[in-house]
Amino acid sequence: MTYHHITLSINGEWESVDVPSQMTLLQMLRDKLARTGTKNGCMAGECGACTVLLDGEPVNSCMVLAVECDGARVVTIEGLAHDGRLDPLQQALIDTGGVQCGFCTPGVLLSARALLDRSPHPGDDEIREALVGNLCRCTGYLRIVEAVKDAAEMSLQG
Ligand code: FES
Ligand code: FES
Image (cartoon, rainbow, N blue to C red; front, side, top):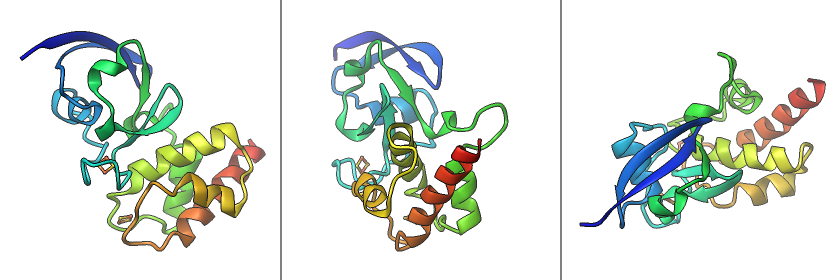
């Protein structure tokens, strides 16, 4: 088995890891780096549970090879809160009751964070489009969409 030595930023901290050629970013995060907040739903690029930000863009980490991430900046759900304070999206999702089993929640939050970073005041259609790759079997999306709008308001109020 061929291993590669890669260095990448995870939630703002640079880390070096030896990874086999075929290891996915998802496997590296969960199995090598114990970042188990990133969920493994389908391993097939369909559910979005494994979504992380790769250089600011949401990706299905089960579809990205770890070795491709050499030099990249990755943000996982563990990196969303800052200085002991939840991201406004996390707080809004709690407040609206948009979390039930929670399995989709890390991926939803990271897709929504990428949306608000590029579009601070999105409409319903834009929110739904941004979350189209994140399947939720519990909430029916209404509360999730409401939470994203609430978080946008919170951010605008500063
Ligand atoms: S686990 Fe990656 S898309 Fe489902
Ligand atoms: S809260 Fe259960 S899958 Fe979304």
